[in-house]
Image (cartoon, rainbow, N blue to C red):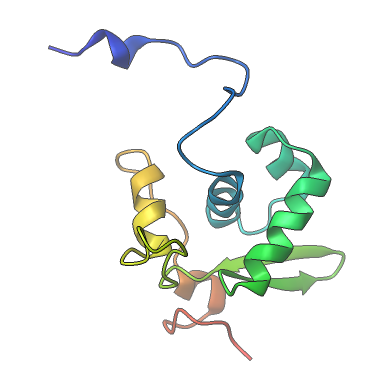
Amino acid sequence: MPSDLEHRPVPDRVPDWTFLTNHAHVLFCLTKDPEIRLRDVADSVGITERAVQRIVTELETAGFITRRRNGRRNSYVVHRNHPLRHPIESHRSVADLLQLILHQGESLPTDADLLGDASGEPGE
């Protein structure tokens, strides 16, 4: 029998704290929609657009994503094989984290879809 927790409505406001960081939330948004506008990421995560810009820069500098310019827009490639940063979680990859967040039956675009090949690494 389903528990009462499964039927509780999700609050409209962002809670005071969560188990995942804003970095993880931004990474998930970029993975789910590689051409998403940072303004829309900010709305989804519940932070400012400026904070999203800082996080995207940090993720790119650390090698978690590659930003590509497409005309006036950016697209993002998330490097799923990249290990997580903290020593407690470094035995896991970005792909493990993304899999944890996905809804059952939901899938994300693959690196090959985004890159045009199966390497999983940024193209030249």
